[in-house]
Figure 1 (cartoon, one colour):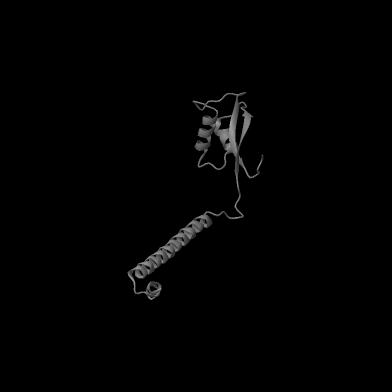
Figure 2: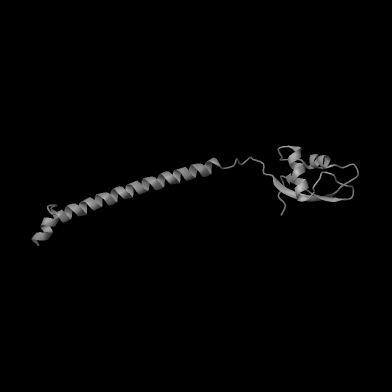
Length: 123
C-alpha cells in the first residue's frame, strides 16, 4: 500500500519515466496529426487545382475510314479533318503512322484511316 501511494505522488523513478513516456507519446501523436493534416491539405489543393471548369468543352478522338479521291493529297485530307493538332504536319505524320505509309504519296481508290476529334461522345 505504501508503494502505490508513493507511485501516485510522483516520487518514484518509475512514475517519472512513465510520465516522460506519456509526454513523448502525446508529442508524437500531435506531430503525426499535423503531418497527416498537412499532407491531406496539399493533396486536396493538387486535386482542386486540376479540377476542370464545368463549361469546358470535351473533345473525343475518333477514327474514320475514307477512300482517296483523284486529286486528294495527305495535306488536303489532313486539313479537312485537322483539329487539335499543333500543326498540319503533326496530323499528316499521324495519318502516315496509322496507315503505315513510308512516303506521302497516296493513290485514288486507296482506303485510309484518319483520326479526328468531336465533342459528341459515341460508344
